[in-house]
Length: 277
Image (cartoon, rainbow, N blue to C red; front, side, top):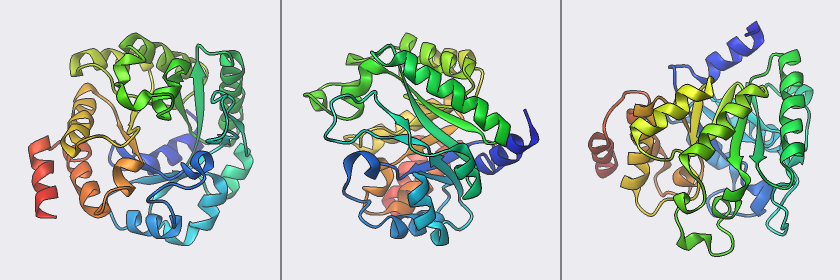
């Protein structure tokens, strides 16, 4: 790995694992509860044990004075909104050079596999990975089977169904490995299955896996257990959004998550942190 990527990944994984807070949801939803004031959100996050934030380049520029010591991840694709039916049509909205110019420590893009636009998505990934190598910028790929889109965005009755109604462990293994083969330095994808099963995903991926938080969970314990299990399986951290900034006390939930991710504490320990407030 070239030195630029090594140095930037060191910022993203300062303690060997990483807690990345995603605030890029506005590019799809337009407005979403908890992100009305991104500067205020980022300032609160910068005062916690979080390691990085992920946002569109324009938002990163807007919140620059509030980031503190956080690493920054630039979301380089979008182009679909709540109004669009074709959710696979995620295209580049910026360049690697622009991401580097604003001080990004990594770039991040979606890649949907197995859908009508699978070849376009994979070409986007491969070409962007080539450009990222040229500039020494690590590439995080949000690797998902296209059939999970309704669940991912909670469309068409998906709120009443579970993740396993849409995808399998085999799906996660395929999209993770193919993403690595096409140039991903880090994979962002779902945690699925049990600890022993997910170890196969981690081993097969060949690059670090960050588990995405996804839609806000029904209970905090459910969320914390999924994070703990993912860490036990070998994941290198988490990328979370709504499960953090849609909660009343952002600092406390991040303290609990840090205990699990960075200190290998169990769920009961994390729950005690939440109870103390």
